[in-house]
Length: 243
Image 1 (cartoon, one colour):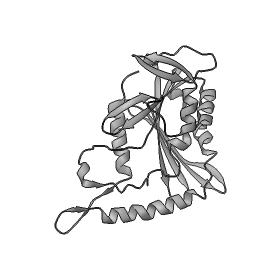
Image 2: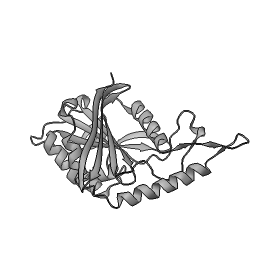
Image 3: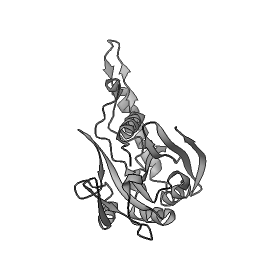
Image 4: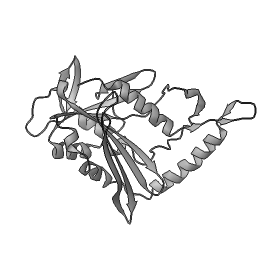
């Protein structure tokens, strides 16, 4: 499988900005984040209050049902699990404020989607070998196979992954959720999928799915769901090539 790290870093850089705000400018020309912090605090209280009135349990299955299987034809699928961005250095990063509030996806994010049950459903529907990796962003950037040293934030998911069979690729150990035929894994020919979740007011969730991204090439799918009358509905959908 080709290295998609450069793309993921740009993708996370963009998404880090999506929950930040442009710095306010004082009369002396110096940046200030007071107004940004206040706005994020108000928004965070609103969206998390709304989230407590929303039942997200059926959303995982609905998202899986709307994935595009033709975009991931390989029998081996690397699933990238996002982690919280600790520190990201982006162009002109000094011009932006980070309030510390998760206004991007506090109610529904990777930890809510990638549960043991979701992985089982995904595995059964796709009949693929699923190899989970995590994105670690901090003092350095790394794509790590999930193991004891590189755990996923959802503990039940972490425990489920560690109970699966293991293999080795390029001198690195990985865990695999096998397809029903236990087809041998060939990571050199694998596909990949990366999901990013955004929460909005009015009980809306948007998910951006990146299929097989290498540089600026690959496929993208965007779906927005809304919770109305105690039911999740797909209200917008688009899919396109980025080649």
